[in-house]
Length: 502
Image 1 (tube, rainbow, N blue to C red):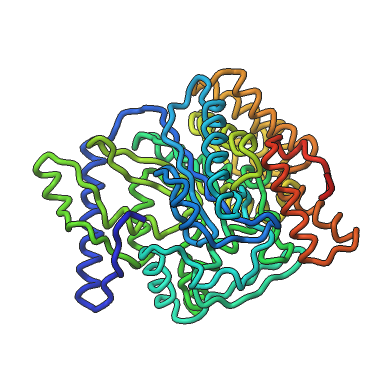
Image 2 (tube, rainbow, N blue to C red; image 1 turned 90 degrees about the vertical axis):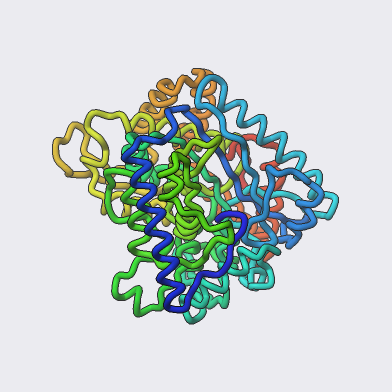
């Protein structure tokens, strides 16, 4: 969201000024695109992982300030809740042994951070939603000590005008009214960035939207929400509801939520930024020195577009457009926000390999997937995969079909028979070493073969603990402790022994 923010200007003239600044930024972006000022292809990718803090019993620890002081690295930053951290991996070129390099850097960084967390009786947990988190653990007093989170909470609550309602029903139902956006902090994800040229942006974004459901099906790792077993990947419904500034009447009218999948395929990146201004009022403003982006362009410079970037960061698309300037040159990125954190470094890198290979292959197909798969089917697939995880049945274009007709296919079969070969071809096109390609795509293939991912393992271990006589809280804690043990060992989740016992 940027480093320095202030509350949005909500008096009548202030709101108009802020809207005008955003439109000015959008006009500058249009000029940059028209003048082809963007960086040339560099095949750069980036990786961010949100993390949880827990104690030795698997219970949440609200200690991120103390842990970050001990880590003392710019690679680690705060996240929304005091029980969260985020680690950022520097951009890498997608080629050669990049996957093994990423895995080694992550293991080294997380091991160091975990040792430092241990100095204050905490440990780092890579998991989509920490199963032992209770709703009472996430109120406004548990937000990180950073003014931007406090301001965002205040503005979103003011925009909604009433408590946020969390209501998710799956195997069980969780229903809760929150006086803050803090429940969003339960959601910890992996964010995969891919720098793309403007000419390729739409194809990559459309491809990423099309495969989001498959990513979730094989990578789900969040089956428990505040002690209840709900969806196999419960982050999306929780995130949407915890950030939903619409009163119920606005939702009934079809006003779009700030967390959403989208509603159509696109033709260029500009459309997404324009939609963000057309559909969503600003919540925050930047305290950076005010920039006149059109004047900067007239003088031959490159505008930072602070206001536009900040506004874009308060709209939580699952595949988000990103504008940034590096070394004085603007670039565009697709930020894939679909995946949960964990379970292990190997699993994270396997998910990344699957994604980067797949979007490369699909973006270059002569008959693009978005010409054959209705957008409504892609959106429905996403919800289905979140509910059912590895057992999901998805709609997909009929092989060899010439129209938009689709058939129902189990996600694991779709991945094994069609998507994994595409992902392998895409990694080859990036120039990734075959050994890396086979190692990490092999992890995804084995999950499909055994029908095991992080969510299915958690659910099975929890029910095994209940059958041994533990109550709900005891079973969740036992499962979380065992998960942490196996996460630290580092073998991929499809190899984990069943149950909570060693």
